[in-house]
Amino acid sequence: DVKVTQSSRYLVKRTGEKVFLECVQDMDHENMFWYRQDPGLGLRLIYFSYDVKMKEKGDIPEGYSVSREKKERFSLILESASTNQTSMYLCASSWSGRARLYEQYFGPGTRLTVT
Amino acid sequence: DQQVKQNSPSLSVQEGRISILNCDYTNSMFDYFLWYKKYPAEGPTFLISISSIKDKNEDGRFTVFLNKSAKHLSLHIVPSQPGDSAVYFCAATKGGGTSYGKLTFGQGTILTVHP
Image: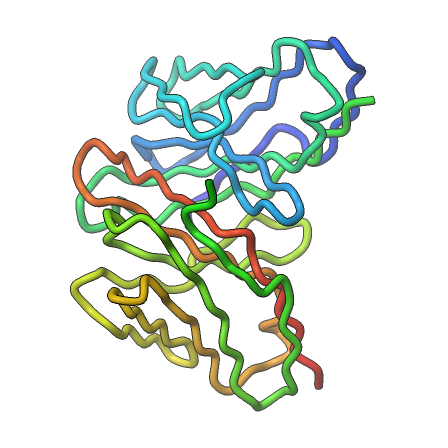
């Protein structure tokens, strides 16, 4: 079974703090993704990575950065947390083979509250 | 600019009846479509998908229909069961190597199946 784990289920941070969200997958997936989920807006892509040290901006990258130093690990960084970054953060991963490219496997999510 | 839209925030259905969830898209470059199911406090899980070369794909109780001319897809669940109660997300992607499996999600529809 594919497993995607996220470092915390719940996190409370103060405005201005630097926040790290970690994601680890155990299936040797090439692609990894970070989304945020907000009511009425669905899942929106923040950043993704298709290889170690490679990253691409998604639809809402402002205020975020990412790091992928190892294939299995993809980190999302909030450089200076703000209240509008309060959200559910979901990590996902997928293979790069053509037949299976599109199916993404998700972690359980991190509920981040910025006060 | 919401390229994938699920215009019904919620749907309530009696157990044993059919559930029909709808999704519209605007980007004619999308050529692969997926449905995900999400329970509270869990990450989304892949349910069923369809390529643009098909107009129907069936997997047990779940069938996805694609109408390319209308840029519309729907998910049918027959018969509906209380365990199907969840949030359903529609997603779409463009093919090709440079997409890296990036998905664009809709806002989600909350399905409630009453016993």
